[in-house]
Image (cartoon, rainbow, N blue to C red; front, side, top):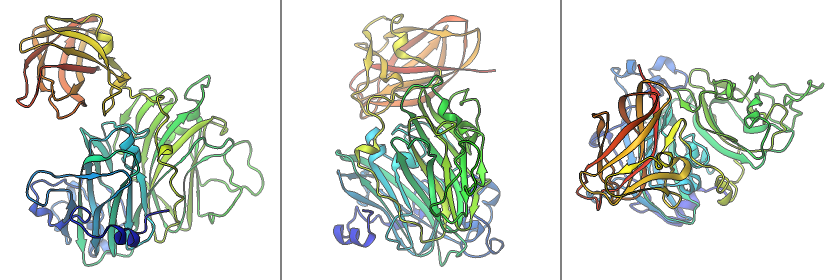
Length: 538
């Protein structure tokens, strides 16, 4: 059963941690600027309160005076100390925002020491204007458009994940109230959940401003002979985005054959039990034809040839995970939202004839009038998780640390391949090169392979931990990048670190790691290398 706002309030009662205080953002030290061209139609030439200037922002609009009152809700420590977080026990719900009045959400940021379980089993819900059933109901990781419980650094116009932070810039108008919660459906406490929500309050918001909606759903597997349904809803509105997570369940002659499926969108057909034409064979008399049909799944995501160049992110579209049998991709309709007056049914084929056995999950993002149809109940907490032991995080075009171990030479200490499965976070291939037993001044020599002579941009993926040191990389006597401090309070991947330009010769090149010191908080000088990535540079 979905959370009933009144019942929830009756159950937990008000508390400091449950109801975040609301303050002027001008009282905070830092603010996130709303950026990018966002949607929603102009109202009364932008002069009405909560009109155009309340709904979209760009650099060009920044000098224009805004009529709203800047507000904020977040997890900062109300005692004036530095415990700026909350913990969420198993099965418990935390209130992120509770505000009565009109306004527009501008920015939502959060971070947490989460793993795959947390990203899949923390459920984000948003309620507008006193509704009993949420307009947004999505596992937290999926809400930020990354599938399979993984964390991927990327940037797009409305959503992004960057170096530990999760950001959302979808504008979210509300007319009477806004109420957000997050529920921990996992068996472990989530300790250290931080969040900030920035919004503008208005005396009223135009009735032409539609409420934001987002819905996660999945099918395990998608029934044979049927399109996967990303969204079906009734009302007036506009569709603005898709995040789709595709997992093939058996090997095909071409492991990406499921990408031959076309997206098929039915608009204003009454949303009844119609006989929809799903792209298999010639249409039959009486079948409902799609208003929109594209030419293939990767084409729908504005790419081509089965995402032939690998993963990428762009303002309006991207492919964040590509492995044999696994794809996570997004498409935002920022410049071209799809309007509907009565209903929309958004589907996609699973292979050319809906004949590929696969699990699909998705998040649909749209704006519409209220009330919206009540969403089906979520599956069990276990069903929210990706396939156990089958999905492995992988960095495209990576030279993994484990492949550098055989030729590695350390002046002092030991170099081995370490499995990282027991730690929170994602390492490419689940391993790292681990150098331990060294001290200040110790050096490690690696052999970095290059496909041809030339200039490259070098990226490094390292490990941070309570007993890791500060190191400097050199090549042919030249420093590559700054010194890197790999201390952290717990074992975690560093994410991509840009080390700068490097000139390499075809074949093996010496790369020296020198331990130069350690953070005062660190207990040692260890070093962990997950992967290096070379990108051609001018």
